Length: 432
Image (cartoon, rainbow, N blue to C red; front, side, top):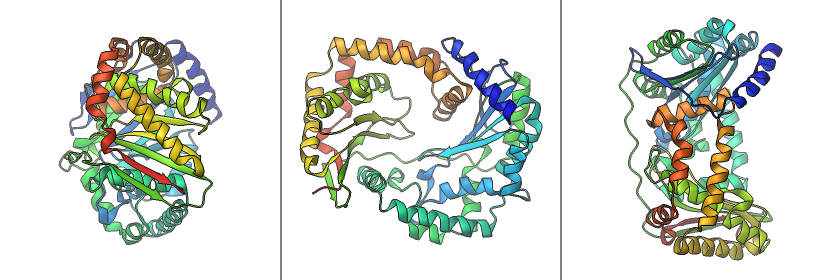
């Protein structure tokens, strides 16, 4: 384990030096239909692999909310006769690291291993992907753990506001479903539900495999063929339904004993690959994405002292993800803080951005971009996004060029067309 940690530290220095260099992405499709994205890097004897599936929480139904998350996690707790302890030890004994995550669009599994231990690491990794056991005793235990977590989350203002905001913003669309489910839906889940979900959404034809590190193209091809061949050979997963934009404003005030009011407001934003992405991205940096140099921070925090922090962001997804503004403030200041936020946004939409703001934003974004590529794991995450959402293979090489080309007029036009404050969803948890 110490050997891998040392190599990872050294790798950060290697990659940081070369972060500004072009990233050469190789891509192909396996015989079973999986898409592959590969970056070769022999600086250190380490490889990183991830497999992404369109098996996120938006594939749940209202009656089975939480099924996607339970399925992904249960896959790591028993596979091909190995129990969770044996799986954990199999990776730990060779210094390999198993990871992964889940969001509304994707379920992902990640593996980091020394190249010399790849066979052993991949053997266990492939068992998880190909032959999950979904042991019923473990499922019953995990259901109780998840239910306890949901009951705790139901008392936390951050969780309450996030859940209420997404439901109000998306309504019956799957993006409005709670990622972790509800107590009732988790209670009702059966092993058969998980098995069925796995077979339907973990199809080889829909999998996206990303690799980076110490392997040749042929080795990468061999690895990905093995991964892909063992996955369910079911039909490719279809697209998510279109998002319906809110027709009128919605405001919810939810009582809570906390001393702070938690406020979220926003509107459906953009898909991945949207032509307005770069104008909106640069514009949002000026509005609320640039931390202490943003307008929202200047107006709400610096001038009036109403909050410690305030932010805004776009979250592009397979369908339009949220444009969200968030802040916390004392209960008695909630109305004032919310008014300043709305006034600042209105002025931003009316007057647009200045050339001075635009130049500063571009400089900060392009200057900081190499730090987004200063490790193999960060590049792997970009490969996942590029592959899963079908972005340009030159996305990383073109990023700073696309930022630099953005004009003030493009920002102003994109925000006016895409952001409609008169139809915003606003959620205040802890309102007086």
